[in-house]
Amino acid sequence: MFDSGKIKKIFNHQREHYGVYIIAEVGINHNGSLQTALELISAAKSAGVDAVKFQKRDIQSIYSQEVLDDSNNSEWSFEYLIPLLREVELSADDYKTIRAKCDELQLDLIITPFDEKSAEFVYNLGISAYKISSADMTNIPLIKKCNDYGIPLIISTGMWSDADITKCAEIYKIDNIRYAFLLAQSTYPAPYETLNLDYIKRLKELTPIVGYSGHERGTFIPIAAAAMGCQIIEKHITFNKNAKGPDHKASMLPQEWKDMVYQLRMLEKARGATKHVNQAEIQNKEAFAKSAVAIRDLPVGHVLIKPDITYKAPGKGIFAHEIHDFIGKVLKNPVKKEHYIDKSDFEDTIKISEWEPFSFTKEWGVKCRFHDYDAYKTLNSPCIEFHCSQSDLDVKFQPEISKSALIVHAPEVVNRKLVDICTKDDEIVRQSLEILQKTINKTMEIAKSFPTKKPKLVMHLGGMYLNVRDLVDTKLLIKRAIENFKKLKYDPNLIEIIPENLPPRPWYLGGEWFQHGFMFSDDMKEFCNHFNLKMTYDICHASLFCNEFNIDLVEYTKEVMPIVGHVHISDAYGNNGEGVQIGEGNIDFEPVLKEMEKFQFSWVSEIWSGHLHNGAGTYKCMRILDEKYAGML
Image (cartoon, rainbow, N blue to C red; front, side, top):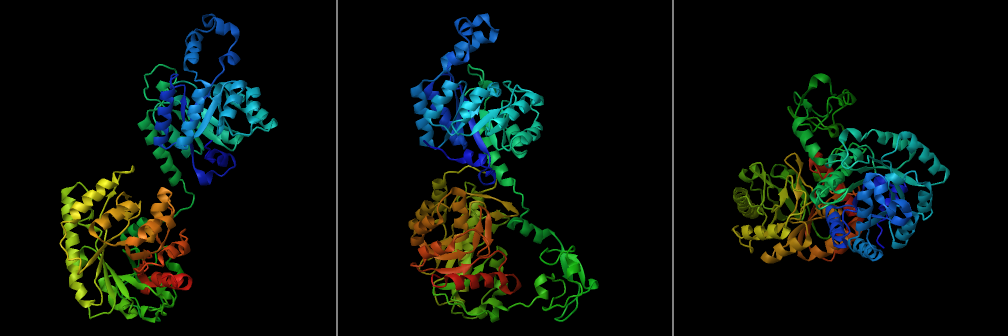
């Protein structure tokens, strides 16, 4: 029996690791058809739920013989309800097939038993949790029977007053019943004004685990409930809201389910309790916030006073709310007029020319820009990588002859749009090919100053979307990239083009994008093998991709290393924590680098803003790598 264990972990108060538990209730919306039931299970799986739920009844155990003999003698609704329940009840063999389908799709199976005989049947069938319907919230014998099996117990509270709910909670406590309460409103569909979402606060006083069982129209109420702390979300699923049966009209279609599950998963990610400033915010802060700027040249030894400063962008220096900590301190670095004043200007810094030597055995290097090359060339590193912007390609740069191997990183943005040769937009492809061709030409021009080895050119080939969340056809993206790449003019004997693997949620132009091309190992291999190219392997990007898609980073590394010619190294966390200092992310470098050490490649560190303040971040990264992994690099 497949059991994700997620609901058990929630009952053990580990919600912070496992998020919202989402249940798609098939209920009796199969209308007695096993085939429909199986198709609804598949639709629920496609939507991304954790569990599907069914209902099990033994009619003889639930209703009196008088009602069963003549339902017309009771309330008028029984005349309709009893025949319907008989029609839709699935057989024991049907439930075995359902159990097998859930195992196949790795979905938890939850069933609502309406009587003790059914409770025993579904336990023996194998379920992840019991769901008690609102109608049975007060059915203490049934609840005690279910609790005895030691399976999580989820209880809906529709149709009962606060007094009833409170009384039942007291009884549950006396009987040592472990349960979750779901807020519910038992009309189908339920009017919004009757949902009483703030009652969730009251349920939290009665039990540590609360959820929401929705019968209203639409998808946004469960999302609101989750934002209010509900750990379990349940709604009905159907293929036809107008089908025969009591629940269809209060159910959601498969596409609605996909939309809701996506929003719930995004909400999970948005509910962090720690205020973390990401790289995109840092970029925007640098662009728009204002920090201390010198109004005149300030020499080493100068004691900073308020008249020395004004506040201007970029926001890279000391901010106004921090300045009092630095007034009266002595500058250890000179600050030119109109330059921002940084905290490091009051600290002893190591100049790049004073860096201690490294003991790496592979072709190591550093990243820089044309304008700060003079500082980095003193390292005489085996290779050096220039990261170019669009405007850099128009800068005259022809340094003196160097023994370092040349690597150029092509611009990622052209005319305020992302470089992309995977897109269907012909104009973006045209501009992208133009900037890439210009970079090829620029690289060949600069290579005259770096004659030791054939230059390498790192490229991003696209596949990013601003709003697309579902996976697109990556094979189609690669096909377009191949066809467009053929239009570039270069001699592979004179320059080596090495496309880079990309992260799933990159930061560009002030915000987050969704990447679809050049992440999957098969896609990278297909493109590179088509042109007999090597690739740039960014370990950080790979880790973010593997975290997003639950792939083992070491296995991914093993797959791509045969086509790797150059490597970028930095740490990472989550699916978008990019360029983190070594040891500050969640990459376990040792097994990754062990997988890489038998291959030959050039590499550079790529710490976010590592080039600032005499390359302080880069130097720290290199020292850590030298101390821990020099034998592998």
